[in-house]
Length: 465
Image (cartoon, rainbow, N blue to C red):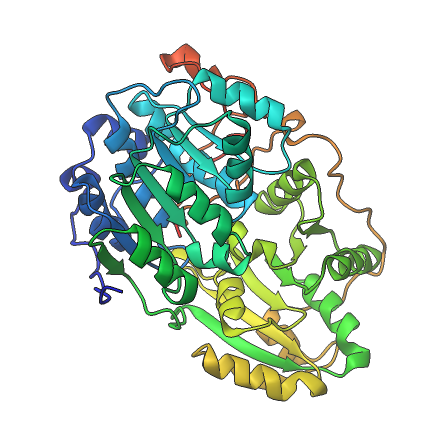
């Protein structure tokens, strides 16, 4: 494993043009409100453009998507991909992350005449086969679904010249390594490979040693570093008070993300919050993809201020202005704590992370936070306590039941106009145009080769992570 090389902040006045991106792409970024590069982008882009294999480590919200995505597009421009033979691949662990990366890279890709698409689970595979048959330059995929397409012959990896593994450690945690290695083995051995991960040990280390050639390493923070604008608290609660404490927290102003251990627990807590008068979305792997997309959109645009989720959302969503993360159920290990906490305090914004701890959980949770390198304050709370309000903004719920958010209709039927969920650096973004959920884009009318998209367009912002 190469030694870590911590990248310094991007120099004042540094521009994407100076890093080697073409002017037409920098103009597209400027139209999206993206000016100066983030540190991980300034460090990584020149090496990717030079054809080097890159090993990147950076905290969430730091700009990873554009750090690998923009130079990948530049490496691919100037040629056309054969139908069913993408030349660039981005592998990600979750559907949500794939959709968000596609949104972030769509406008830069359009600027250089390239087509971007995704293949993920939860979407009819026949629709994806049709998209692939038209030709895709950069394909963003979850490992399982890409393996399915490779097995049935709708995709060949013979032409892949550059491949990125994003959040490799999370793919390892989810058990995707067999599919990942199968995919890597089917790509040309001389191709360029980029790997981004929060941790670089275990199976990730094995991947690096086996598939990356003399990689240059860039890190913007140690793995256990806590964000300076993030405050952590342990809230010691009696079991009998826990449900009421959660309801008080859910009634606060602002966007709140609550983590629960199981799918059943997510659905149950969301229902309890509805009964207390709080509009809350429920997100977990058992939901249909249209449901998950609609739920996330509703949370991102503020229609639903509370999102209750399993760890599928710990890395799979990137939404601006989440001011509070609540571990309703304590995480299983230090990495889970850090990944959950990383949903707030993104790109320099401030945020609060609280963990609800019953007496029987106290020793284990305190041990976990120490291992995570977190300095955390602990305080005992009850519903209505002043200290609970001071830490979280909690207030008494109305007690008047509200209906659950309607997530039954396909996402493309009701495009949102508020904030979009994205994997971007947290800057203000412009409004986009609604997509069609899978049909060829209107972008073809602007000179783009007819190319598919399977996500609604929202605001474009700096690629992150």
